[in-house]
Length: 283
Image (cartoon, rainbow, N blue to C red; front, top):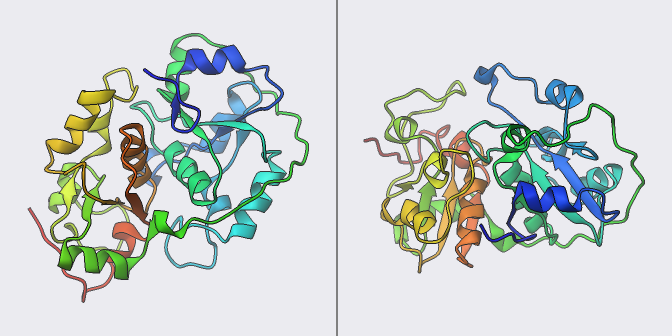
């Protein structure tokens, strides 16, 4: 793979730079409630040396009734400063999902939304451990660091934007959920949501972006994951998922392909599936 500090880096790349004073590693693990996993407890038991832990709720808008909505600029900046992450740092984000990137891409997307650069660790913590690389339970030494933040609203879409795209077709809506949830054959994990998908949406389950070892596909293979679902990589894309977390994996994949016109529907199905006046499709 091509290591790129603005999108994706290998475990080898990270291991070679682990002692760099300007490196900041963040564990952004998060799991659906039915996974039965405690991300913070797993971090405390063992993590990449120097890694800081951030829960997605800590970098979300607590005022919203929807889960994991992007936070105000001030909240994101404050949380990063408390982690000792700021201007001039090389940031690498990982999570503990066994099948590839899961929640790390959400924090990567937030960095982009707020005008900062970060990379996701290809293969995540699972690959790091499989290679018997160093793990520690020691907490990192944290020193406050200033961060300059500039919000880029063009990277995020709301329900009105998505409704217009569904009606007018000026952007493609691409859903990251597994196929049974997209079709409406499987129930949503959050109560009160209808089953199905946004009219006209394409389905690119995030699992299709990864190899068997949990690393992201490259070049033509990565592009084919989108093309096979009917996505035109020359046209704008709005990504969606259950609550705006795994949609960011699609954004990461598109960025790896050099696609410049992609954004994320922050409310995702947690919002669209809740309102009976918004049309849905099944099958």
